[in-house]
Length: 515
Image (tube, rainbow, N blue to C red):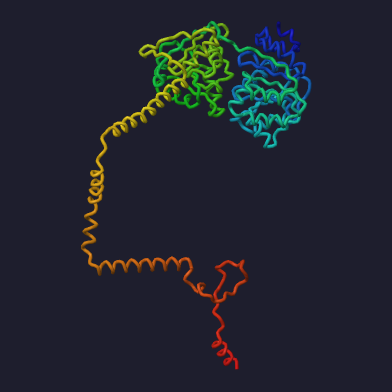
């Protein structure tokens, strides 16, 4: 099958011919006719299988008829990273150069003003990351009511990066009647649930990921101690004739640490991960493509979508957790029939990950030795088994303690019991050790002194009791049976005031004064 058999326009076929492609990939041959029919597509395919062209080509064909309005894009493509979004934009420029279509790229790290100007001119194809798109929508700079085609690319990566809530919000802003193209490298239950919510009677297209890298790639793996990995990488780089190389780490923190280590040892290296600004990431990629930088230390997400044809080496500083990522990583080298070399540094605890990779590619990665460094072996079993052995040993150790105590108790029980007379005389001896001090203190006092001391104690007790009663308000006039004027039982006590009775003597005195 050729591209002529897919029903594309002459302008598109001309653009494809300029690129040099003649035969479509499996996902392109299956997806392009379905997209041209207007149906929803649920595709399971990894990066590197030609997935981008499988939706850009039919979208250009569909958008060729029509005109965009200001701030109202006609189609939307969501990408998890800036690099992937930029790569899709390049494909649209490449394949749509014979069509008059306006495109806008909305990614973080660029000026809002420039992006707003592009939206004001009208956009046929809008390529965006979720965060920047929501920012512009909340500013009132974009309307989503005219989107007729939605593409959600790399959905599993969006799930890993926490973008799914943003994607759900964006989809809720779109028209209900639309065409949705949903692509993901894997289909976990969460992605399947999203696909069921976003798509309507989709056509499922599954393209098996490449089970093995190209035969032109020479592979190797070295097992070293975790603390010697950076030294092992430097020695390995020194023995290879490197033109340019990608070095993959599993975590962004390790990317920065390894980049600083390589720079400190005189290597031409740069770092690439998601926490860098867009301008720095773009500048770093351009320098690497121009061979101004030899070593590029990157994470999987940041390096996803990079297409460097003449890459000579790939180093896995960390063994990838997912076996498919190994094929994806080393597939960066050995392209277009060129020779490539890929080496992996593993630790003794990475055995289960290496086993999964060997099972995927159908063969074992050849072992290599690094000059001047000890070659280790993988640990038997996984961490859970080792933890199980440690826990069983700990249980055995704790179970021995009661046994030791019982043996001691048994020995004590085996001793002959002391006679009753000895037990009776032993107790007074213990009491008499502290008794003489008290006896001396009491013997020095006379009966008068003891009486005075007892009286002083009683007075102190009375004073203490008086203070407590005064503090509580009990030794006041309220203790008398004098009548109390108040407003009822509902009044609090602190508002009540005691009033003395109006005695006859005072009554007579008041009468004489008034007379």
